[in-house]
Amino acid sequence: MSYSKLPELFPEEKEMPLARFYYDYPVRDLPEDLKKQVFGPPMNPDDAVKPQNFIQWLKPCGEYEKVENGYCMLEDGTGYICTYLKIPEEIDVKKIFWYLNWLNIHSKSMVLGHGNLRYKIWNPADHWDHYFVNWTDKSDGIHTTESLDMGEGDRKYDTIRHAFNLREFGLTDEMIEKIKASGCNVNETSDWESFDEPGAHLTMGQIRPCPEGGFERRSVEWIGWRPAKGGKLIRETRTKCDEAYLRKVAYHTLIEWQHMMDFINDLYEEYHDKPIDAD
Image 1: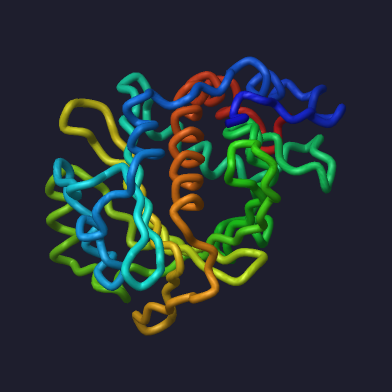
Image 2: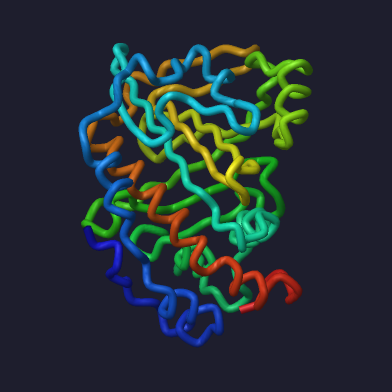
C-alpha cells in the first residue's frame, strides 16, 4: 500500500501554513491485529446487520454487534462493511465535529480546480476535494472527490453524501430515549452516497462514550442500497461490489480515522478561533 506516499502539492498550497499538517504528520499503518481483520477472511454474513433492519445497528453505549470490524458479501450480492476505532482519551470529540464541518469550506488561497487542502491532510494518498454542494451548509449534500485504494493508482470518484431522516425507517422515541439514557447522543439523520457511476452506499456512524473511558467511533456501510421517500429501501443493482472492494473501503476508512487522531488536537488549537477561510 502507498498510504505513506505524499502526492505533490500545488505551489499555492505549499505556501499555506496548513501545509505543515500535510507534511509533518506521517500516516501510520494499522496495528497488525486490526490489519488481519481487514485483510483476513470475510466475516460470517449471518453476523451482519441486514439492510432491511439497518436501524437496529444504532445501539446504546456499551452494546455492540457480534462483529464491529469486518466485511462480507451478502446473499443478495450486496456488501457489508463495519469499522470500529477507539478515540484516544486526550481528544475532545468536539474537535472532531469541528473538523468535519470546517473541511467543507475552502481556504481563501485555494485555487479552483486544485482540490481542498483541508481534506487532503486527512488522507493524503486518496483525498482531493470536499465541499458543501451549495457552498453554505450540508442541506443540499456534501461533495467529495477521492480514491479508495490508499494511493495504489485507482481513479478518483466524485461522491455526493445525501442526508435522510431515520424516523422514516423505524427510529422511534422509545429507541431514542433508550440510547440517550445510556449516555449517547442520537442524530436523527444519516447519509447515503451516490457516485459519478451507477451505485449507492447506505451509511451510518456513531461517536459515543466508550465504557473503558474516552470515546469510540463505529461505522457501517451497506454497499448497493439507498433510502427513498416513504421509508423505502432501493436496491441499486449496478453498484460495484466484491470482497476486494470491501477490503479496500474498510482499510481506507480505518487508516484515515486513525490519522485524524494524530493531528486533530494541533489542528484545532491552531485554527478553531481563526477566520473560517484561514489558510
